[in-house]
Length: 238
Image (cartoon, rainbow, N blue to C red; front, side, top):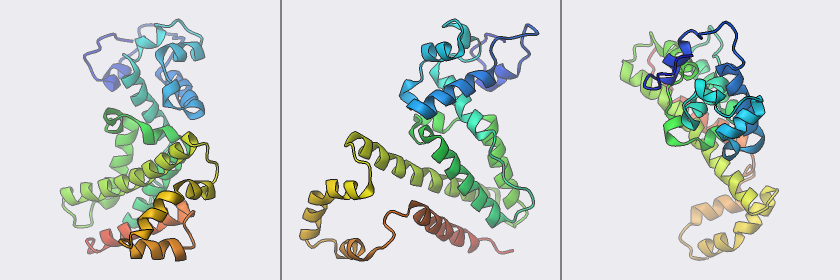
């Protein structure tokens, strides 16, 4: 493994290893780090902890990654590697598959919603492959390239926004030792009651009194996604 750290992570990883056998590999490092993050969260990920999990010397992982930023990119690529859109779908079905696949990925790996900005924007091979598949599904519809990319980013942003909100709710509940949505509502009730007594939010108050699917996150997600896809459909003319 080359040690020139001025080159991008993915270029370095594609260079041939100097020896026929390696104790470590990028795949093994990523798998171990993902397992720790899935079980304990991103804050548990350190290079020393990683070396312990891999039963290698503390400096050994640095042959593949220069530090935690590289490691997070490797983890993101690892979990996205299994996400592929089914072949032969129409544009709407492809976008729906993109959204549902991304949501499932973020439910399985909760730390994806808590990544630092530089990692959220990381251009890893597996994420690029997903983008390529999505853009291919939109190609040939008479859309210009800017519109195609805008559609892809809109669906991707919708999923990440929805999941970031859910992640924030879960983090708040954990910090307050709340285990159910009813307990959450009880915790927020005094502040919400004050807002409602001001009389400034009658439509919101109507929602609070009459809504029947407040805890149906999947249903809320599906509704929002279909509204977004309906809007996209208005721009797709064939």
